[in-house]
Image (cartoon, rainbow, N blue to C red; front, side, top):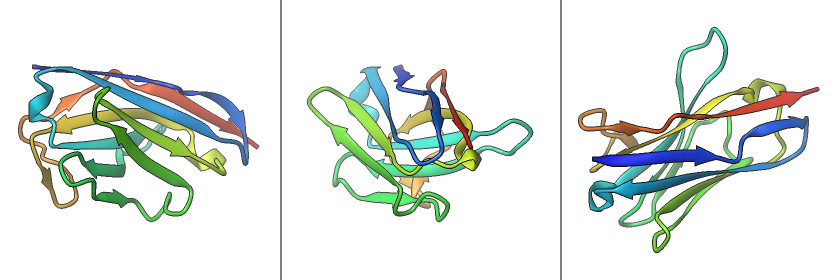
Length: 124
């Protein structure tokens, strides 16, 4: 079992920054891949960014490239999502998900664990 807890969301104005954190506990040796997803009101869930926690490779959705950065503190078992130059269209609930490995650049949907989410609201 893996537990994931997100934090760092909030309400900001366009152009500002937020840093989200995803803290993992439990059987974290299985967390070879961690992704951030988001889901806005009335929208489908969107994969935002992924980090392969073993080799450190990263992947970003086109909508956030150049603005968001995913990173990790392996010792503390935390994955961060630094979000700069935020836009109203970034408004969503942000979730982190973990799995043993990445598939297609994002967490393997088989055996995937989810956090409870943290809300990000960007006003113009």
